[in-house]
Length: 300
Image 1 (cartoon, rainbow, N blue to C red):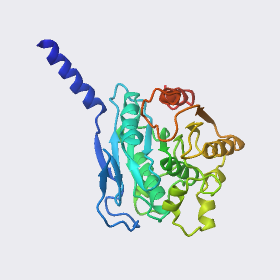
Image 2 (cartoon, one colour):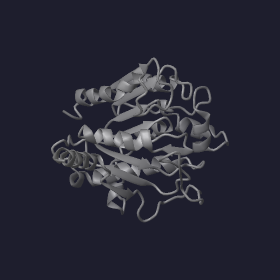
Image 3 (cartoon, rainbow, N blue to C red):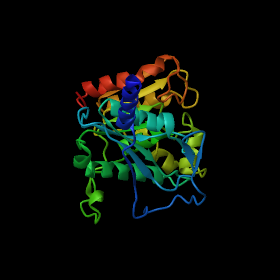
Image 4 (spheres, one colour):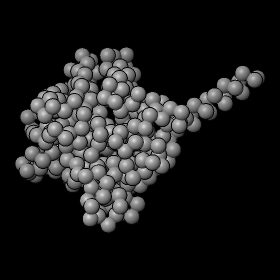
């Protein structure tokens, strides 16, 4: 009987250790713009969501004795049409917490053809995390961004289109930098060029008007500079959903600009594996990412 009690207590402690700490609205006083979605948000297939019209952050913080001071803002994928909050969101956050890294899942507003909406949410979320760094036990120079598939496009957009904050902003949070300190990109959409983009993501983000100025603006391989954050890329060679050229072009641009980067192209894995364990080579990417964080000096 005692063994059962001890086991129950141990399980309760474990669950509490990896449970969500709290949720924050990204725009508590209302967003400055609208994506035009008026129907209710809908959950389906477990914890996938669509019709997202209000951005929220789900914050998971590590125990103090494990805390490395690093944090990752996580952007789930879903073609900019929905968000896979489970294996590309919450599961990643819980795993990061076990490694001593704060995991903060962003439920961003879907664009619905309003291209500025998702990246505006992600930039604001990064500013909020920095503003709360002391309170949350995070070092403000160790805040990264992660994204899978279209979420990888969102993450790489923020990693190539950022600012140091607006000194004249009336809102104190608006004065803070939104530059991520590193990026984790899983099988990301990178380009909007028809030649090798994911057309569903492009149409949902940019609309179907074929505005070439927007295509160039959101082809993130074209916007890498020496200030782009160090990047860890993960993908599979047999990915037919988002072809590997997306990551390869981005990695090439990073190296042209002498930005530290590491890329792993696994033989098998397809598209959308995230944190799932499928008994394939791609299952091992999380451990490789931790090794990279250590080698880059973000954690010890």
